[in-house]
Length: 148
Image (cartoon, rainbow, N blue to C red; front, top):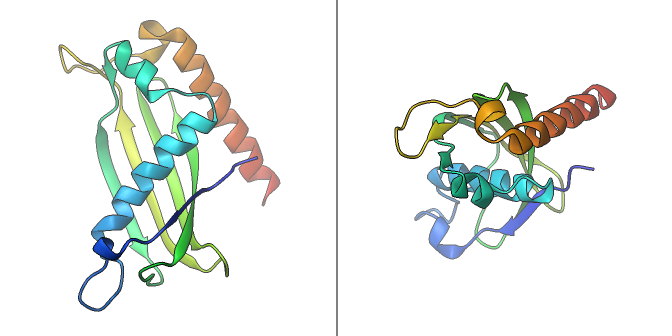
């Protein structure tokens, strides 16, 4: 089961109107991605100890509803694409209590060697990580098909 990432909106994340500033949504996507990976046994720390980095290639967020200080949100993340060189995550942010859709986002990442900064294939560089990511991507794909 995909357990969403939950958090409350902090006061410092709001603007003069008392609404969470749009730039924070991107941070919440990252928090949710790292939480998602950890819950599925994919350690980003382990990846970095193997001298592999996972920079963001692109990120997008479509805003649907405002959230305010002290609101609680949940962020659902899925690994929607993975080929060993690139990965794409998709996100849905909801108000926790009413489940109103707040935003929809996506982030794309590649895998690079920490020293050379050149793309790497996880299948060759860190096979155990590659196979775990493949399994997670397949699980998410099956779960999404089951929800349709």
